[in-house]
Amino acid sequence: MSHVNRVLGVVFLIAVLALTVNAQQPARSGQGRGAAAPAGRGNQPPRAPLTKSAFVSHDKINGCNAAGTFVNTPEYMIQCSHRTAPGVVEIHKKETDVIYVIDGSATFVTGGTPTDVTAADTDQPRGKTSTGGEEHHLVKGDVIAVPAGQPHWFKEVPASGVSYYVVKVLKP
Image: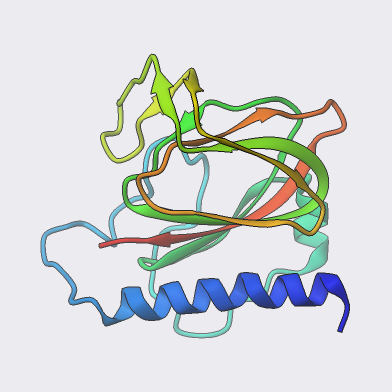
């Protein structure tokens, strides 16, 4: 088994375990889990339970050059992104991110204290930068899991960019 296949296996094992734990928690009425997608997510398919297999061809994904959300359920989302510049500090209060780098590299920071935080969406506060935290130099084949509530951001991204899949496991 190749290194890439082992890494992909780990990513999907983590996602399945997280989904299993999430599915075992009782549903809360009136919480709006099936409501419209959170602000700041762009054009996404509506959230609906997955009732049959969801296939996304390599043509549509195209190396993540056309970033998007490909599966969007009340329990998880599968997204693909391509960055060519640093981002802002994100704090997803109800989402665990499992990120798998498919091409390129970047410096990714987890933890720390965000600065200049704004919260137009209280479940998705954003900051301009952060102090402290742990820096990770991500390269093709790396996987990082960021638990809900932990600040994280792409601090440095080369002009050549970084492409990655994100499995977002949603908490009730």
